Image (cartoon, rainbow, N blue to C red; front, side):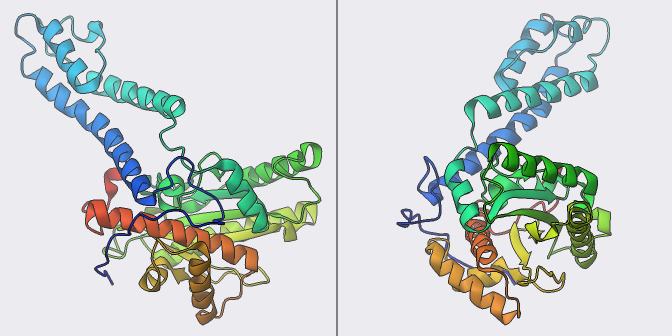
Length: 361
């Protein structure tokens, strides 16, 4: 049920926090930064249509090419290929071809900016690695559904440092078992030969997570298409891949115990997560989970990490789930971070995305 809640008050980072937020210690400020970046990306692509509509309105007038380039510079920040404008005086401009060219050029420029300006760098990678090792993991490998509404799952929804988390998307979160096995082998070989990210004798595990999605407002039509918009089937499908991956490691290398599994669901209406916690023996029930709304009902994003941990521990106990302490601490961090994202949606989208399809962007 949707609740009216006050948006979090920006607070200074707590002493002894598990890891810090790089150059943005104000988490409210981080939300503003992320929103500005989101709007910048969306507007860059929205401007393509505005630009081409303007150009098509005067394509048969004198000095068309010069005027078209001026409009392109104003709206897009770059010029259009002259060859696509040269014959406008004898035939209509191929707006479709211009649109395709503009989309690819905008994507290229945004990609270049992403790697040069690093707009989403905000979490300290080294501190994050130390944190997950304290939780008993050396690698976090996430396979979300390939639906465009989960494109922001790492840096926005879970607020994890994208450079420190392995991520590869698949339809319905039904990830390729062989590919994941290969990545596991590569990781363990690096540990064995180069002690990266830690030495092979460290008592840590490889954490494999799958992320499915659902919609609380339109569960029958806006859920995962790969699973017929059925949240239970989506959870069961993702869980089956996690279990098959763990079994594959065990069958091939007799060390399945070095794998930990995590199943996460995302409500694409408001980015709130639910986490299906594993028992101490590693078992996961697709019908039992802790929901961020339950954490959010009794805690605030400004609370300390320890306070959030205690809340999640109590909620897990009510579900009769007893995960390992390290897993519980890692999951508490995910909930703490997700509360920031829920506040983000509250502040900038009135608590729920108006377009629950997110336009697949």
